[in-house]
Image 1 (cartoon, rainbow, N blue to C red):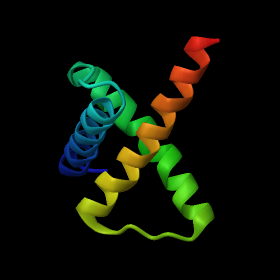
Image 2: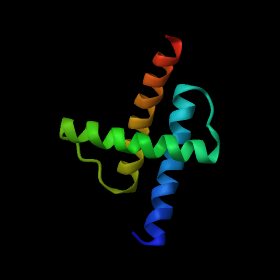
Image 3: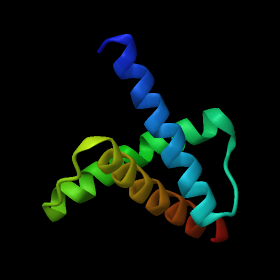
Image 4: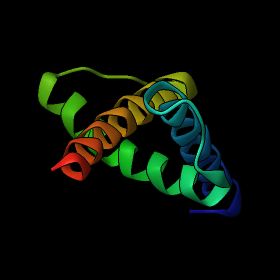
Length: 83
């Protein structure tokens, strides 16, 4: 991975984490928190989209996949925090 790819990866993670924070809680988690949530969400979303046979290509597809995974991740965390 070159520097540009790493920066794009981090930017997608930040945007996905921010969007997931807005959808699930009403706000973001700060830059580092958004990146972490977005990257973990990209892993979860990529796995789930792969199981469903959905292919989301390109920048927008990557953001959608990461955001969907991050929302699911935050939902699961909120359920665990309640118990």
